[in-house]
Length: 399
Image (cartoon, rainbow, N blue to C red; front, side, top):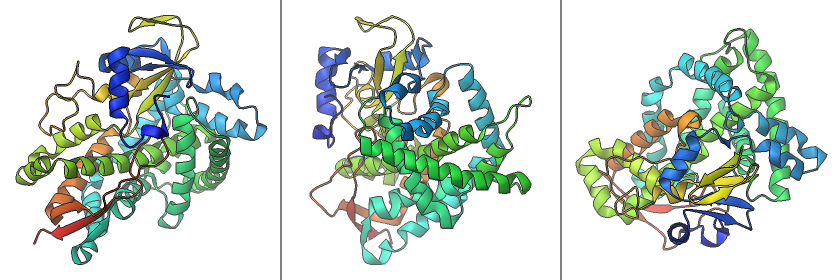
């Protein structure tokens, strides 16, 4: 199987070997077409013949009645919608983003990053995943969405369980993961129902309140749509950013000349963040369904077939990127597809870029030396969201 726990530590040699043989191929284990070339992935994202509605096909595969609410929630995700439903949801969600002025959170992100790193100034140690890369995105997105501090640990647990299902149900999922996702959705929907009642009576200056009151031509979000897309926003601003920070710092540690150059010239950091996203995409694949018979990469894809767009492989395609296995922080242009493309491009990409820029700038300003405190880095078991489970560091203060 191309997306396997067996090579989660470094999937890129396997992806490269497969891409060299066939830019598009049928994986009998996944029962899906896998698209590996950058230009084909980018084209498929923008081609309406590739449907985003994966739920309608796979709902029937899981007959357990307890999973019905889970798949109902999945079906309401903006990422699972085709036109015109996708545009309707996206417009309502963009309305919420405009009302909350996410860009004004820059100083708060800076403050939180400094606060999380402060204990390491005296200890000389930093468990980067648990002490920085996980809490920073959670704190930021929870504040922006409007999740109270006392609720954040529980909400993150619900989000994590739902994320595993949302990213893998059409490719590789277990009964235990499905059941955990179903329980999380039920609990989060109950939680949100109470919050909605409160916010209708007493609006606040956050995204959740803006979503509750979002309206366009008399259209509003239903509770199911609100639950689904609040989970989407929390996950998009949470786990994927954790992967960007962790995989990005690991890449810098493994490429010390790049880290040294960023110290000398911090103006390169925004471009370096884009290169990190290309070099090691947080999301490894995104699913589509063929809405009609399609010829792609010399293969005949039939209507109804599952198609997996390999974002990680696309980012390392030598037809698009010179020396794709090298981290080049001044690479230009960087036409990566790690945020998706077309109508379904990530709604939170500007927030992710801002967090990445601030986080890496703060790390390099705070510490004059950053090195691994272990010889072994173990990745988690989610093959579609690969990220080290822990990354202990030795750090030396800059002054």
